[in-house]
Length: 254
Image (tube, rainbow, N blue to C red):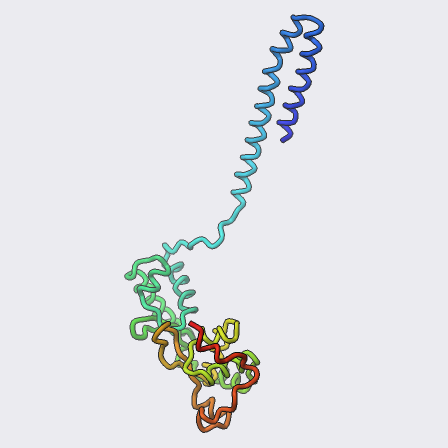
């Protein structure tokens, strides 16, 4: 630090003057010895000043930092509603009150009240989103009024060709059904969540229970899949395609 350097210089200068004074006279030597502590004090003061400046600079830097990933304040109802919306957008099955309450760190009673408030608001506004309680959980659905619009989009999408990723995923499911998405992902070596959703939307695969060991959702091909391939049953499937590497390894995946 600059202050420390100046202090060292002060010590060095005084030490030299003291040595010269000792050769000249005892009085000047005494003066030199008296001045030395003053220089040390100056050095200490410089260090303290620099330390204070550094501390101030550190405080200023800390003040400029913006915390990221901190848990939001959900005291206000609007903030809680927004948090619940975010959760409901990512669930793939109806979410129970207790699960949502744990996620937002709020009481079940308050979360249940918020969900009912949100559902009523969507209905009152005529929103295309419908928040429904199904069984023991809540989930977003499209409102029945706009079903024709949704169907048009999905049917138009079905005329588009499947991507290579979708074909590979469909092949794994076809030859090893029923199978969980985690096992499909293990064979392909990539995340298949998006592809699975696409195949479900197009009606080529469907859910068929859960795996007894892992609890994961099992998928199988549909009648539409056979119809599109011109097959009467799964027994008519051709030999495993070259694009499906090491398919037997799927049985070893936990």
